[in-house]
Image (cartoon, rainbow, N blue to C red; front, side):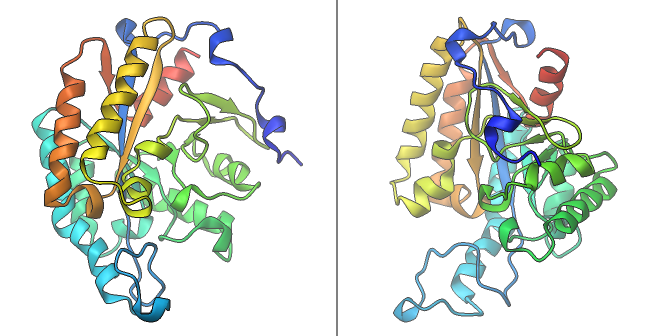
Length: 291
């Protein structure tokens, strides 16, 4: 069976491939992923900010569960307000259970704003730990299709985790691109047992979770890193266009002391010409029509 990376795609140095064109000759395509999750209070939480007593995880883990809940109640709406005020859309990596539970108003707000919906597991649990990965992926696809009225195109695995079979399961049910393979600054087509699936550039080092929670950087580092990343891609994109993405969680970037860094970074990007502010779904559509 097809499993290893070299069986799915060829090596390609970005300096040795044909020039990829973006709409209207843009230099950089910029998209943002907003991670929308539902944590089960009767299971270990996905992330801890407040460490458990004596280093032993507890169930229920009230403060860390509430940290996530704050993102749904408060933080998300700050992110949405800025993006809407500037005519911007994001791609939502969403647990399918959000569309069925108490967090549904968040899903409705994103749907009404025209955001793309990406599968992010049926619930917030890494795929290699679920009992039936194929069923989890299929159920996620079906729930998002029913809720949005269109087939979801993209997938971001919880924690970016996959098994060697995941790409085949994703393509089998109809997902078209995946952001778990942050290996390039342009989309990459990968073979599966059925239809090809596209690896969309994804920002491991421009994701607020590892930056702020795991590595404990100060809030201003978000702005500093986004600007440094963009400046380099903008310069290089004059000869070979690139994709730049950012990934945020409402309970991290939506808090009062960080939201300003998000807004300031986007203000900086918006001050440049020849930038395509878009969604992962629109980049996929362009790439398929203009490989």
